[in-house]
Image (cartoon, rainbow over all chains, first blue to last red; front, side):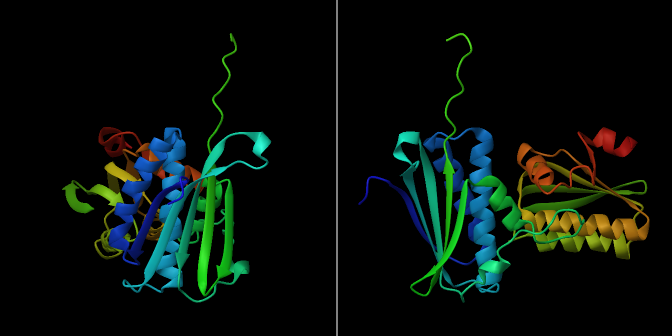
Length: 152
Length: 110
């Protein structure tokens, strides 16, 4: 098993499992070393991405498979130093039109369409691709370097 | 998630506890819309002090409650937001759209 693999989950597209994944992500991000606001951001992004899969990719069906992989990645270029948490979410729903993967404008007060906006606000990288009959969403959040002390 | 209602004079207070997400936000939406549209309650207050997390579907339910109350000419108030709930309303630029108070005393006096 790769040293960089941190967590691997297989779950059904059942919304009752969202709280289980949030619990795991809260602990994982904490152990990884993120600040409390970043722990909440990453957990929120994963929760919203899973919600989108359940609602849109699987149309509310409860028994479809979702794969989730979390691993440590190095910042590129390597000279930049530091590392991040990469989360891959895979589902077997129909191909998604990438043009539809845009958060809506927030000027209008209306319900819906906020999930993707939350994901993009929370993560440093958000990439979508179709591969081997699966949709894959790749999310990456990098650790912030510790702030320099003015006196040091 | 658990939701219960209290009536104080002409105000209905919903006490919500747990996380609000895709699994239960339809229940919140249903309770809110019934109170505003069917019962025509003039002031509806959401006690969110025991809600640790709200996702986008939960925010959408609150927005529906707000819009319904505006249509009905009633008031819709939130109080006791956790850091996570506050962040989510800030991210969606809705924090200033809702009437938000720190505690029940302030919400009832408003």
